[in-house]
Amino acid sequence: MEDNAKSLGRILVVDDNPDILMSMELLLKRFYEKVVTLSNPDKIPDILRQSDFDVVLLDMNFTRDAISGKEGFYWLEKINLMAPDTSVVMMTAYADMPIVIEAIKTGASDFLEKPFSNDQLLATLTAGLKHTESKRSVSQLNRTKTGLGLELNGSQPFIGKSKPMQDIFATISKVAITDANILILGESGTGKELTARAIHNNSTRRDQPFISIDMGSISENLFESELFGHKKGAFTDAVIDRIGKFELANGGTLFLDEIGNLPLTQQIKLLKVIQDKQITPLGSNTKINTDCRLICATNEDLLKKVHEESFRHDLLYRINTIELKLPPLRERKGDIAVLANYYIEYFNKKYRRQAALDQDNLKRLELYPWPGNVRELSHVIERSVILSEDNQILLNDLVISSQEKSEVPIQTFNLSEVEKGTIERAIQYFDGNLSQAAKALGLTRGALYRRLDKYRL
Image 1 (cartoon, one colour):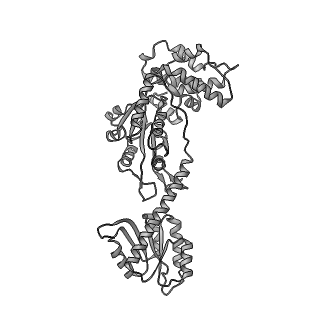
Image 2 (cartoon, rainbow, N blue to C red):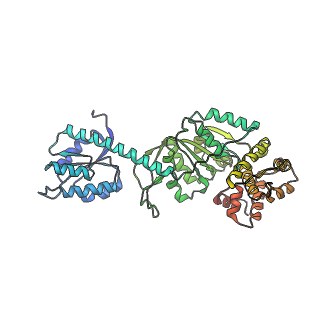
Image 3 (cartoon, rainbow, N blue to C red):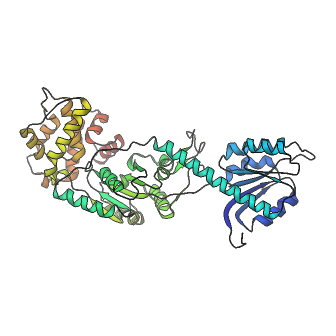
């Protein structure tokens, strides 16, 4: 190993002989980025809490004239408990085969008998570093599998035969094969997550995870934990390690919905991760490389928010290499019948019904402005299938009353007023039950609360 070719390894040496510590520090600093020495093993827990190490060189005996190795085994078990992915190399001048076997059984990765040569030491450390890398790869794979088990990946098809949707499909086919970050714009319920999934499914990352998260639903104090993960004990409720969404999406696609609701303090943290392509879980000192394709979505005007200084211009620049704007359902009326028939078939199977929709009611669906877009259509059809009588779908009262009040063409409506009115009607329809209203509107409770505050309802 050349002097000018330092390894990125971090080495901790624990020995009660100051001469050995000094000589090993002088040697190892030539080859490794970080070398820490300890003469008192009682300080091992503190130093492991402060820093992560790749290999620990641990003496087996610290009490003068002791040769049993019991102290070394005690500290080996402590290190394995605190830093299970770190390799530990035991050192002693009193080695015999039973001690060596016991050390390996207890969790040591290797054994060095004093005195040893510099070449022996460096070769052992090289093997220890590879062992650590292997253990961390397995550990990350297991954590990722566990985290992915909590993710629900939808399988709903992306439907549309209208000209606006055909244009969207054509754009998706062009951008999917790249790794460019994409910003999807569109009103609530237009299918932004479906678009993101379609991009992922047509990309070279299709066999890797697609991870979705609603940024508007994350409280500020849980932001880093959700996105970057945390270690056990990082904060009061951190009773187990948690893998963050960036790490879960490694190799695949990370979809950040409602990115426009992100506070400025969180925007700064997100920007740094996008720039550095590294995360650091809460309570850890180890940086984790990330390789995921980023797709963001919002129904807000981010450029306006930039001018209002509520959204960072440099973050907007990072997330919208490609900008994709989805048309609202009222601008793709040719898809309403296709979508309605799809949802009728889907919910008939789900609820074991044989409901059908006649042409008159289908026309009524096509005349309705659908301020909640495809999501609203889905909920209306679901309720109508459930409430159908004699296999005949009866349109929900919410749609009927809304149509009767819509005497002015939708093109003259202010979108904020349309949304506000729809929210008011939904709340009234469900007798003030916000959970049911939120579900019918296709919103999370958090998103509904924000709109209630926005419109002062």
